Image (tube, rainbow, N blue to C red):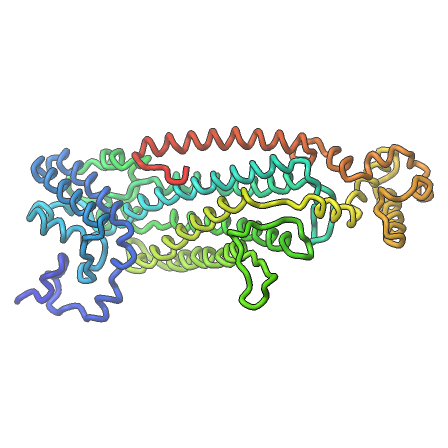
Length: 482
């Protein structure tokens, strides 16, 4: 019987042509072609290993490498013709390779399957994307440190329940953002350890009978080690889910930053001036300056969280080993990486140009009785039980509300009316400056403490940056954004 699907590399089993709709429906080449360079990189390493193990001749190896190198150039130059009939990036490249070099191109697939091939490509792709994301995180963290250093003394209200709580410095608040991103960096670096394991050589699910050298391939591709179980290797997408989870946390943090910037730039707060280049106007209200970039980043957080849920649902009912369902892992994974890189880049570009309105921040801190806790602490140090001190301060705050004065503006006799323990040194603690300066412990908001935290953070970031560069040097990868 004549093979009606002879234009496909995997068609000999079938007597009928693939339904035209099914052909389009099951194809992934429209989106997985972005892994073309990773696929070529993996194939070159595979060919070198096959030759080393005596499975390919040196001539066949060289022909394959030359052919793949030409295909890489064609793709980069936009000359490569992608075909849905070949289903995916792997079969498209193999078909073109066979056109270029003949039968040697067909030998490349010896000792592997598309199952372990795609699993390897995804890991290579994701490893590169994590590099770029870490680079953008570094830029944003550096921008935050620079801004925090400028405002280590800038007093603003700290909030709980969006109510004025205690005075802090703007620098201290920004360093809270830095700490969130620091945890995000650690999660990505930890995730990268599990991404950097090589599935190639697991073949379809059971390994291969050819005498391959998986350690050699792993070393050539810069992986930390080959995977330990062939069944798990081809079906594992934990690393993708873990990446999406880390990405969701990054986007949640950026969304929180966005919420604060949106509030602070409003007329009601008026704490900051957003750079014009990151805002837009209104089509009808000429006075408007809308914080579009923070709003869009806040919105995109839901998109990435949705991808995490999508990947979890994709995997939750799959039996071992590989299933066609796994084709659905790429689009949410790709979009997660793209969204993270773009949102971090937007923030890294925007943060250096934020302008703090110091006077407005200071006056807002004064209006909310932000030093009430300082007065309670003062009374405790004088020997009063904290619960009694809490009551005394509550009465003083009531007087301040009735007379529209801050605690620091009440007279000494008025304060002594509530407690004889109060003396004239109380005003050292009731000023905003005195309040923030008193919190000199590790993690406190005192300006000197904030500056020390910034210094420590810079040193840590520089050390991590050096480690990251060394890692990329070992794997032969570039370090974009660094």
